[in-house]
Amino acid sequence: MRLLIGTFVVTLLADQASKWAVIERMALPQRLYVEVFPPYLNFTMAWNTGINFGLFGGGSDAMRWVLIALAAAICGWVLAWAWRERDNAMTQVAAGLLVGGALGNVIDRLRYGAVADFINMSCCGINNPYAFNIADVAIFAGAGLLIVFAGRKKTP
Image (cartoon, rainbow, N blue to C red; front, side, top):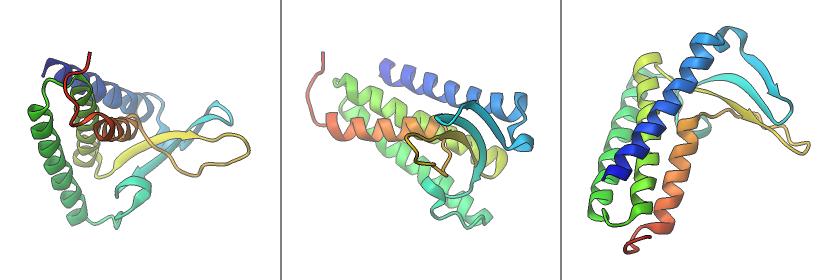
């Protein structure tokens, strides 16, 4: 469980530190857009009241609390799963990523009323209109790793 806790802490700290940097230090909510390495990487401020790609983002306070409760329930389920598979190192890392990312976004919902998304990546003539954050990356990576490695016995 130390691997899960370590991954969780690093993920949560990286997510919250990056959001603090762009919101508080760079004032991205006022600037809205900063070129970092155009066209591949830019910071574009987006407040997401829904889930991925703004789904279920009606902006109501009730939906915000539903999404917070849903994230808490999923985190509890993932932690229970990780406890059952505590001999599987990759499951522990995956659970730490997923729970750290989910709780990073919950903190945003509690603090700001929405999730702070700011990373925008485009490539090869394709202009990506969406922004995301470190928590989103951790959630997807954690979920993908759980799918691949869950149910396996000990990993080296």
